[in-house]
Length: 381
Image (cartoon, rainbow, N blue to C red; front, side, top):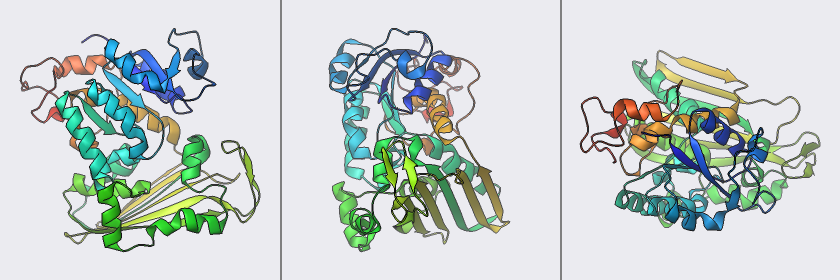
């Protein structure tokens, strides 16, 4: 296979890493798209840094026309955290047979929060022979890391996870979704109230595509799928994080006053038919001077195991995971294929297209014996 061709959809903070990482792994970027008039028309080097590359950011509305005339292997989508907001771009990619991978947190396992949109994208991707999925930090640190530890455990009763991150690092959309800058009363009304509902009401919202999941909602679903567990009941609760002193938010362009919300903690509890309970908490807020990212998971059972990672470079790890996932994406079955059906992510020391050449995934008529296990007997041409 020749160099993998890629487009970047969403040219904010995350794209500075995804585009640079992709270029350094031998990927050819042929297009970039955004809605921000301040960057449209500018060379992507103004985002990445370094010398001029010769690819200008285009208006997101031009994506469909671009894909009609330009062959593209993969689209990297780094926009918002909600599947419905990413769906239009995913659907355009799927319509043109372009594989797409997104940092959208809900996209990691959307079938348990928005099955309606997931099925629509899945059908379109299968029809045109491409794969759509979500990946990022959660793929490794909330997903595969935990499943690997579970594989070293004789008996599991409870899995507890807690992870924190600075919403300043991910842009204004994420900060707003977390309630940063709201008063406590506004938080209860605009964010927390959505979870003060019955299981039946939540199910109706999910089926209608109107449910707003916290990140761990989709992570718990992914873990259950990966570990072969069957969900009996799943609930979530959002708790505001309150500023103890005034905090400046460069992303929001405001000063969050003492007593206002810096973000939120979302706790998702999943009960399974196998008797294993997963309790996962995600804390996203505007950081004060003494705050830092932390990933803390415990598997309780026989034996107990705890892993704590302090100060992970969450943004860079998210972007590197997405870029390293590209070969598996290209080899995966057509449709909306979540990453628990792909091999564990691994380090790519060479240009990404070489990992596809080695296994022959993209050009075989039938799966070869040595084909990448991610193909699951269903290679795409």
